[in-house]
Image 1 (spheres, rainbow, N blue to C red):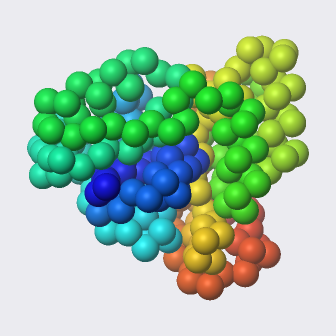
Image 2: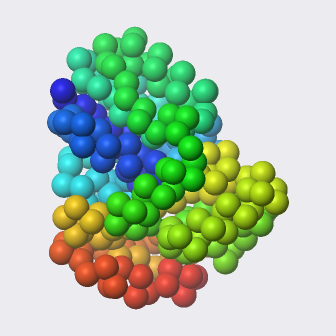
Length: 229
């Protein structure tokens, strides 16, 4: 079945796309939404880098604003809309309603999956990514640019026990950017960043990057994103 994927560049939308492909869906394109700040629906920090992640996956991408999103999915009536919804009823219901209205089916492979499992599946897949936004007690500026790995997961599990934060960041506690696709060896090499401090929320803006094909895993994080602030 033909499908389109809502791809922010974060781990959840990326893994949902990969899972859709694994069950035989043919991915026609990805759609990246240039989200409004503090959007209730879409990933905001570095959202346009969804196009770079799509390029890593070797899939065509289109970038639209929030108000253009429905007009864009109308073009794919009869296809499946894939998205990385995990816990948000608001996001899931709105996407389902838009899909039904415009003749699409939906596929949310991470929906209500155990959050620790989501994180472990991402890490165990060989994929790599970094934290690009934090907005929760226990997560400060030093978490920005940090790799999503088992050590980071243990920190998140500990913070969940202490403060009740979502391990998968589903409540907006953090946002991520996928930087390495193990299925073809492509990576996003971060070259320059800037931290935007919004009080409890801190965003790591990727100002310059380079897409590298046939990337060696040890090349991806040679430049610590925090070093370019």
